[in-house]
Image (cartoon, rainbow, N blue to C red; front, top):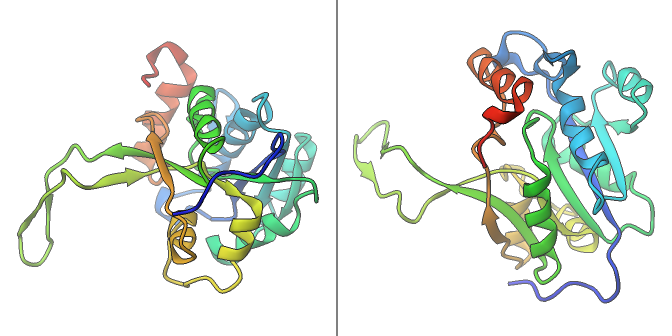
Length: 224
């Protein structure tokens, strides 16, 4: 497990990953608008408006980059995979950045309170991830065996760590790893877990789009 964080006040940056095309959504999900604002922008603005985050870089596919710049956000080009996009984002960070939050642009419901929890835990832990308990019964697709869920969690973003550790984790990444936490584990850093939020859902299909529209367009309907 990783040790404590570096001495001194950290300089925190957020990478908002917007490199995917969202084929399962049926259209361009990152451009899907809620209250006239595209999903990627909801995500970016959540970090830009947080006092604990000093820099925000949107890692975007080329066709989305002009819109990101027009909205006033720094942008760097995304890669063909999530890992490549994170690598591009890390390379684009200002040199004085010490800690990084990596967030999926398709999770527009991230709240200021969740960012608070992640940053607070990052004060005393090398890396942090938000998680939720599994509510549904899990069954193996082929054997039909029920999988015990009491030791399982669902992992969300933003996932946070020291920049130096993320750079090391991404030097020779396992191509099968699906998030930053898995790559950090490969270099001996176990992410501290904080409570995630149901509203911090990843928008994948059109049904998700309907749910997130209700949550974001009517803020009082949101739950922690």
